[in-house]
Length: 183
Image 1 (spheres, rainbow, N blue to C red):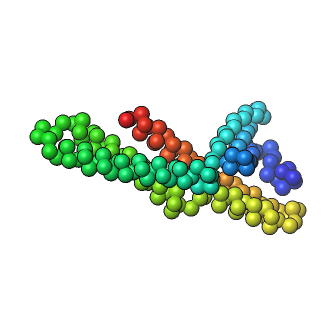
Image 2: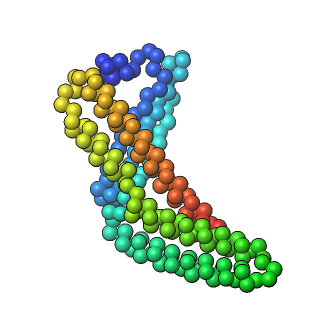
Image 3: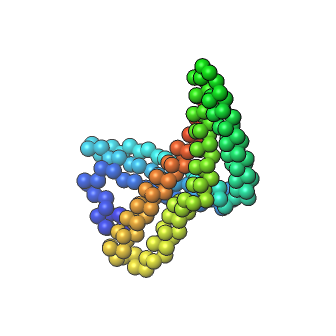
């Protein structure tokens, strides 16, 4: 079908194959991207990327996570008050206290930001999966070029949206690791 719809010909230089795999046992979604580059000489080279995302809000551990984040936030509020008070009371204002205030603010910002993000933010990833399924289910005539092109474009756009959200989740994880290392 790819050649029939003229999506792959002698001018093609790049082919992207993407797939989403849902694993109900772990309640996770994995995105597999295979990239094939075609050199001017006709040689193929390939790369792949595998990104996995779990939906924390829908696990039995979510309540525990919320409780721990609330306790951590409360501790950081107390710590911020104590460290700020010590900084204000100190005559020479040592730089280590200033660093401690900044680090505590970063911890507090991360904790509160994580709680707000989990409660307020729309889950783009699982919402994207539902949009993909609806798009596929609406296709009734696979020989219609426009319908197939629309479905594929919607699929690729949704994959890009999901990939961007997964990268945000990955960045948040790296930030958490950095904060742990700073402590």
